[in-house]
Length: 299
Image 1 (spheres, one colour):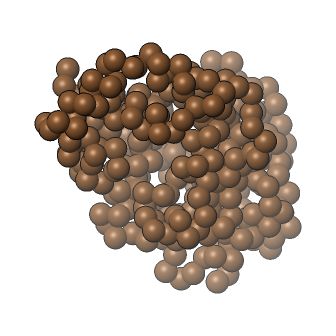
Image 2: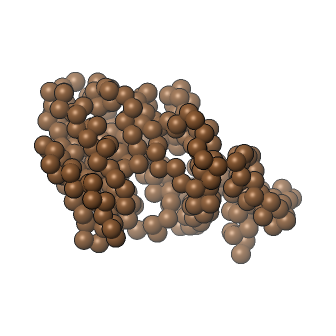
């Protein structure tokens, strides 16, 4: 299918996105398509100077927003301002690793294409000790094969590397009413599922570069649980739609729920010690998050 034009959209905040843009720009120029690369900076307190070089590239722009609007709103704004009907969203802290990355997306587009997700991979070599939890979680829970992703095409979709038709995005959009915590991508994916919008999975990953420290990742994981609880309470997510909320709601009033709460209260510090170590256990991480969900839900 001949692509009429491609808008590559990248939200950023306090991050040097120029290497990513430069790589994408070089690939796009080799293809016989119209394209644009739009980077919106969500009002970084100290904008990264290197990003100004984006404006020297043909068909590429770097815009600093006057005020911070959050992860959902900035993606919606990028889509609204996009010049073309095919949108390719990428997170700033990703790296293109294949010379035919853009071409692979364009070749995957069919007349009935709605959303295409390319996937994510992580570096093979272990990072420094204080980043092990994020790396291990990403390697085992996010860096999935196409076959693994297709078993649950909506729940295995991440918004850091996906192509979507502008008309489809208009039906979904990211929810701007929710607190700027986590799970905006989960809401986006589940809304697509409810509207019977197809998510196609292909083998076209990017590398996730922005490894957070284990301490930061653990804090953000708790924020993610807080958000999940809120969305279940508000009816934005059905408890049965995510593994964590489904398990928590199923056991919350029984013996298993009381046991998990006791484990969380009694061994919270020990579990955190493991999760912040050089050999974190994802089994302990799962128990920790389930315990946090049940404990905070009951308070």
